[in-house]
Image (cartoon, rainbow, N blue to C red):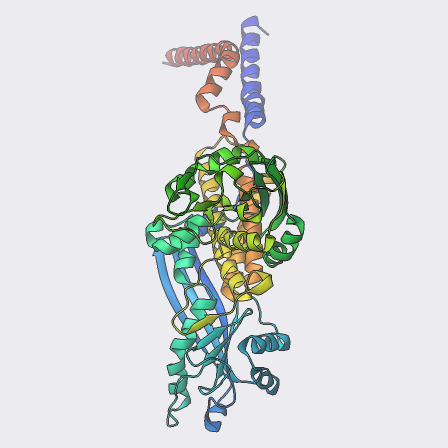
Length: 557
């Protein structure tokens, strides 16, 4: 074989190996691995349509209906309301009301001397499901409620409603229609309100859709999280004068732990405490001659937290949000110390709170000892007084919103539990919707990011977390629609955990990968010296082939 032909075949063989083997091998070994993601299902989550279903049971006691009307029980009625929050978010409220007459045992429970005892007796008979509302209609002449009280809302999920005056000539439809207004007021008090739900959607919708009051409640409450750290700190700026003793462990068990036990479905809580000596406030209080005491104005309270916060420390082992509750005992030279509001009036609790941070209470001890007392003075702090303030602040921080019932309503105090069952339900509705809104926003933002930047690696772990978040979101929405509030909250928590793990995964950092222009800058010096001889050889072969074809054609002519 001539040398020239052998060189031609060698160039073709090298070019074939480069094209058939080299380029595919290089492409495969340098491609960005991107696991499959359910983009179609994620795009559906961008348009969120939530349905919240509430089960309502209206129970008529003896003396509220005629025998003829009672024969038509039991029966049910479904009422739906729709609200389009914005172009991509809609809400539908479904109220399924069942009407029936009271059983013999329920009649006995309603014969208790007080409404609180009746509420407890009804709870002992049967426990209502999470998110439901039970309204017992009692006769207008009943002595169970005071004359000026129309509705009594207990600690559980039951309410006592004094029957409005019914005409004996009315049929059952007219009676129920006349009762619907009162029942709707009870449900709006014990269950979710539209503005509360819209405020929970703040991660998706503009806050202009929310009333000022709901916006204030939403901004005050700490954002939803799988867990929270609660820290109680005793600040003693003058240990030479005051030897302070506080039974914080017993106080937490008596006042705080019952509330945390009820909130266990929402998040995990850990509680710790500390005593800080020589810790002073960041501002100097002013002496007010009119009351012979030192005062802190409302304008100066914002400057109190930062200097104190530097002394509090933080739990580096946990990424959960921290709620701080500080008990400050003024030193002997600045006692007594009182907090004034914007109207220059003394705050009754002598405490204030900072949204999403915690609260501070000033505890004066100057009246507990005389000027001749031996220093340091032993002082036992009244923990019942202190924990009453901290418990109220903790409820606000965790999102237990103020309820403003209509005229004639009486709301029973939650007592030692710190939270009524219906208050817990209101919080569960808001948290479930907030978790769904946050998780859907997180997962759709992640999908858009990965779709726009093609050279980010999507490993199997991220794909699994994304799929888990999407599945949990779909389950949470379905459970809300079915009225299963407890399961909806559980799935929404799983969704927000999975979505945040995927979104904040370190492997998704775009800086770990080279953009296309940098890749070309790296590969050209490697491949160009090898490709130039091959390309030139191929061009020479093509040129020679064309020349031979032209010579043959000329000879044939």
